[in-house]
Amino acid sequence: EKLQGKITELELKIKEHGHEFKALQDAYKNAKKREEDLLKKIKTDHTNYQKASEMSSKEGLELESRIKSNQERKQKLSRIVNTKAQSMFEQEEKVYNDLKKRMRVIEKDRDSIRDTIKDMDKQKENALNLAYKQVSKDFGSIFSTLLPGADAKLVPPPGKNILQGLEV
Picture 1 (tube, rainbow, N blue to C red):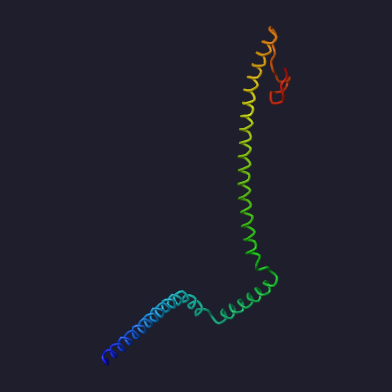
Picture 2 (cartoon, rainbow, N blue to C red; picture 1 turned 45 degrees about the vertical axis):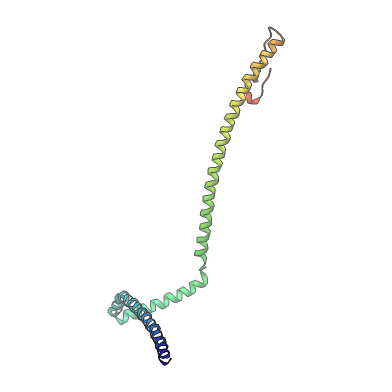
């Protein structure tokens, strides 16, 4: 029993040390990544540091005063200029472009509807022409049967077509 208790105690310590080891590994990875990030930053900032070290104190003071004046100018302009205008413009531009796109679709649909109406008008005229010829023929036949030697037919009025009416 004593040995069993000792074994359990040692197993717990092993697990505990395993967790500590894992935590240390994670901390090491994080530190290594941070070191790499800092090295990258140092490399990119190195050129700026070189320029700054090459700058004379007069140039440094001049640069510092330009920075301050530009910051002051920015603060003054921020009171006057609407900073949200750019985002509002972008939103309105999106709406405008969307409406233009819809307009093109509507114009395309309108043209399609007009073409369909023209086709249907042609079909209607052809059907009426066919019906006109058949009715005129049948009317003439019936009329000549009822009154032998007589002739009758349907014709459009002078200067008009069959769509504008017919007369006997």
